[in-house]
Length: 298
Image 1 (cartoon, helix red, strand yellow):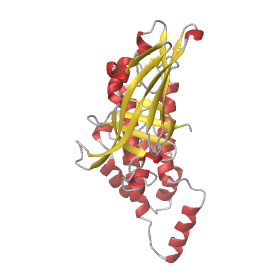
Image 2 (cartoon, helix red, strand yellow):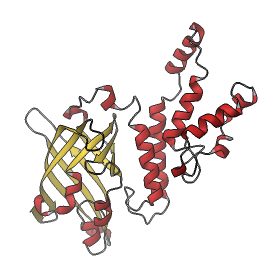
Image 3 (cartoon, helix red, strand yellow):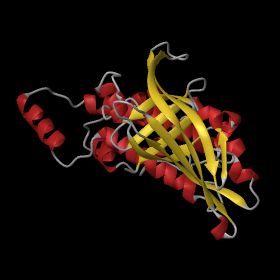
Image 4 (cartoon, one colour):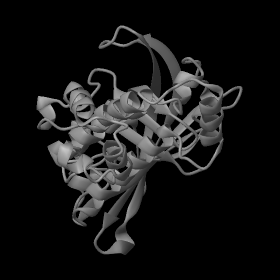
């Protein structure tokens, strides 16, 4: 998908002409142009200029693929070889597309704040489209474990790579110090989650770059965390909530109680949407379009 998509991360009939395998099927008569147009029209949306989002593209791909399922032994053997061979699983492909698009957003302008905080609205919509497709993939540990996620599944150090949070955009970071400190600038944030039989500790480490660089500093937010089961306000289905309770904010010689920091509020309760060994996607509990995407470092 990422190789075919246009500058708005959409695929139209023009872009499908670049899909070599598809064009081969059309030339050989294995797929009729009318069949392709019928499937395309089913998934193309007026809201995406009559083109396909990544989620819609995957549906088109699956429907075309289903046309060639014959179910005989030879075909089954071939499919088995494909699955065990070097082909990239579809969930991994969607994940790769997401990470590639996030890089495109960040590389667009070196003056942009990290984590997509300055991303354009149309880019935010495309990230949301890809995430919607990603969370349905079999690589999602939440689907694999039927929602039975444990603390140990999230333990580790995670780096925030993207957020569409309006609060983080307004505060220009997690704590807000990046936008309020003289010559300061938010440079990124990590979240460390620890869990043992007796404790479940959490720490945010936010980096604030200052000019001159020798004045740069880290903001540490410490507290506890837990997982809760709830019911989604939007779907009515069970959901998994990562609940964080910040206790102290420390930077330099300053240490204050975290309940004075309203900027931390948006990340205190987030819905776990996607999880694998090194990628985690969280959504706002009261705004499912608000995303927080983390990559695992350790």
